[in-house]
Length: 210
Length: 352
Image (tube, rainbow over all chains, first blue to last red; front, side, top):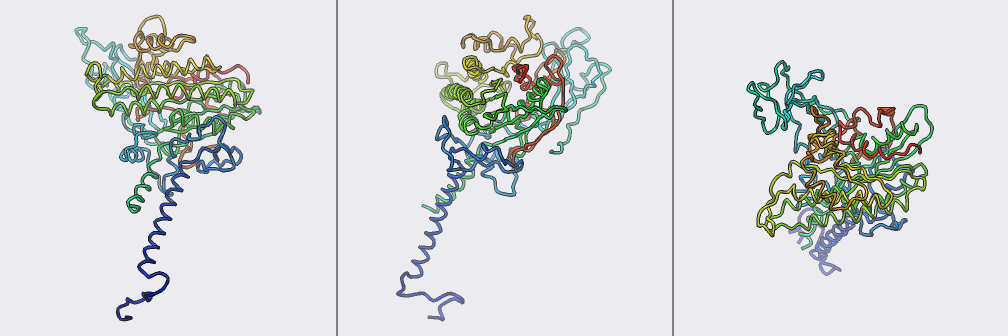
């Protein structure tokens, strides 16, 4: 019998309270049960029953404390609040420690899972990137038919103004006929007014975060 | 069966996440002053100053821009307390920010309470509508409108009942129309009556107009002011159509007008003056793109603060501007948040 036993394997308790295969099954069942309980528990926790949350406590709020609204059974549901009010869970509750997905990655993840509510209803950054065109010097007096178009990066930096056509009142050619305006209205070097300095704008590098 | 359920539970738990709390307290610290008053702003990603980041947001989102105006007007420090949840629909903002976090407006230093909501109701309805095939179902839009009206009214009632009694100014900010140009396309669904596809802009514009009407009309009925961002963002800052009125002023809600009057004015009479906020005419020769690269959220200047994954910022700084000619800072119509903050500021009282 021992010859059939693997090294280090305890002997099977034949005739004991539970046979080893049954013990194993119970162990599997226990682990699964614990997992289900934990999953349900934390799932409900992250949905945050609509109690007055940590966020309401102004005193002692740390600038760097993650803003998780933990359930607090010491508070009741505030008057006027829908008991089923917490419609969504917070992104912050779901992100693994030490990881920092971009918002674009999170939006994509939600959409891939068939979710298009919350921030998944936002377009990802870069959906309509800044227009690139000829830089307009601040002191250059534009002739009729041209416009200075100002843009900003997503981190709040101004981008040099670019030269665009006024679609409603475009410049005219030598025969006083309106020149054809491209669909994007961006003035290309060959269509720039006489004397206009030809230089394309450069999008600023991302700013340092404070 | 259990083995099959476990991964599904884990996935559901992970991906149920869809909103982002972004709370910031930024004090405009005016030199030589000791008095300090508070502005409380509730809302979604707009007042949050969302900038496509999970970690930070605009320092000068609209409420903080208004705080800077207040600081000069009242010669005081102004604490702008922003309690916001990006991605939240109106009900979510009401339940989980305005009601659950009422303590912020109950402080005795509170003088201004402002809120905005409904943008995500509209965005989600638009997303749902764009996915439709077969016969168009317009109830997604009407449901968004109904929810907006319901929770705007409830929010005003709740703020009226709970804010500090010395609160001087209560303002709601209504909605601009992000993606106006992008919606100038046909639907994939077909109208039940005509059997043809519909131009989505033609369906969404009346819907947002009805939402905006009720935000301003409920404000009138319930003692709030209405910052008309639709007019400010979508109309030019000069008389572009030569009708004798500055376009943005002509688009504003008129106190006491009927819903049909307002909606007709926006969707028909002055429709030609509505321009996507990514090409906002400040003059005949100069335009500003008020919208970030997601074609949804307003531009800003003045840097960023932590808001989101790393927690919220509670800090202070000197004002960028300390006096305002004609009640406007020099960049009031150069950035989306600056314009929105100015639109809120016009209702500021002369004294705290």
